Amino acid sequence: MSSANVEVVKASMDAAQAGNVEAALAGYAEDVVFHPLVAGPYHGRQGVVEQMMTWMAEFDDFWFESEDYLDAGERVVLLWRQGGKGKSSGVEVMTEGATVMVVVGGFIREAFVYSDRDKALRSAGLK
Image (cartoon, rainbow, N blue to C red; front, side):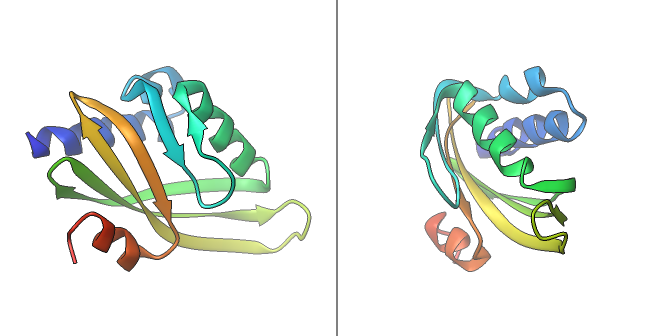
């Protein structure tokens, strides 16, 4: 079952990176809870969109790259990098982190974003 969970997360991320919001959100449960680095949590699929749009609005030329997907059974750890130019500062930034996604019944039910990859791996029981 866990490899199927990785596929749920990967399909959602691939769709998001291709700009297909509807397909990306289809991987999330309707009552998903999303815990970003700041603020939140955000609830439901619309909450996921709201959080993402709020975050991306801080940057010009925002980009996001999925690096790897780690199978932790019910949890999938997405390792990512992101960057852009800060709208208010004009400074180019690049950060890396991880998101631990809890997948139940073929849907992402909860997501926890970490700036520290080691903490994410520990929370998923991989370290």
